[in-house]
Every structure is written in C-alpha cells, then in structure tokens.
Length: 186
Image 1: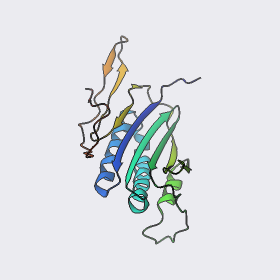
Image 2: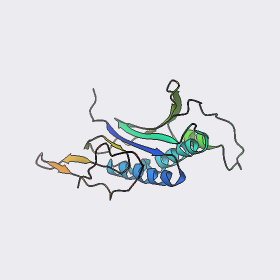
Image 3: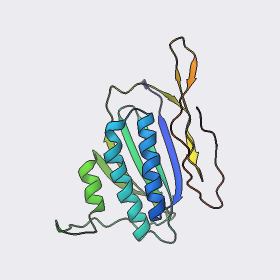
Image 4: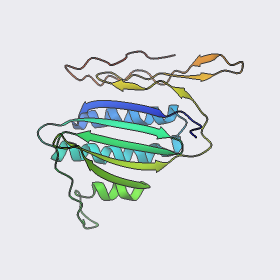
C-alpha cells in the first residue's frame, strides 16, 4: 500500500554550463519545497556530474531531461539524453581533474545505474534515501520547458487546501519550447 503520493518534477534543457547551474537551483528549490533539505547537496552534486557528462560526451545533441521523483522513502534523480552509447566507468587517479563523475555519483548515492532506451538514448540515474519524517504534501506534477514552474498545495488546519509558494520563477529559456503548464502557485 502506498501511503504517500509520488512527488515528481521534470526539466528539459540543453546541457550547457550556464543551464547546469540553473537546474541545480531548480532541484534545490524543489527539494526544499518537499522538506528534503538534507538531500540537496548530494542531489545537486549528482545532477551536476550527470549533466556535465551529457555536455562533454552526448551526441548528436546536448538535449536532455532531468527528472526527480520521490516515492515513499526514496528520491530518484534521472538524466535522459539522446546518445545510445553507455558511459564508461573507469578508475581515475586521486589527483585527476576529470573522469571521476560517475565515481562521485556512486560515492554520494545509495545506488545508481544506466538503462539504454533502444537506439534513442539512455538514462543514467541515482537514488538517495529520504528522511522518513518529511511532511506529506500533495503535489501537482509539472514539466518545465522554458521556465521554472512550481506548484503545490497542502491541507490547512481545517481541511482547506492551501497553496504553497516555492521560489521566484527562474527563467530556463529554451528556444522553441513552450511551458507544459505555467503557473507559480502562491
């Protein structure tokens, strides 16, 4: 039996250095909103490493999707890209300045892996254990295409629905993509 609703957020972007910082802020804000502040550092580090890999290695383009989902006591962070080649996991010297991204993801996460998506790409994911004392918040699931979109409600003391404001909107500005749903609740 599932005792909590799934919490889900999706961001589509070009994995460019300027976008990676924006996605870190979006993920951090979403986790703060879900009262999962303890997971922010690990999630932000992991997503940064995965997006950097897309930026450096993915072909034919740098388009990707970052998805975070909290289901019961597990946060899963996934990065989908269009390159069907699976990443190489290699040993790196302690003093190496590159080539250690997946090792860092493995070090901060509970588990991680890669799944091919046929000939259309792959998904690289990692999980983090969520604290069990997080309050239940009923969430709307949003896809972000061009602008940060957050929306959530919780139940007030008398059973009324209370909107929760997350953060000021952060422009992600992806040309050619319209927001799937655009509203900042607050």
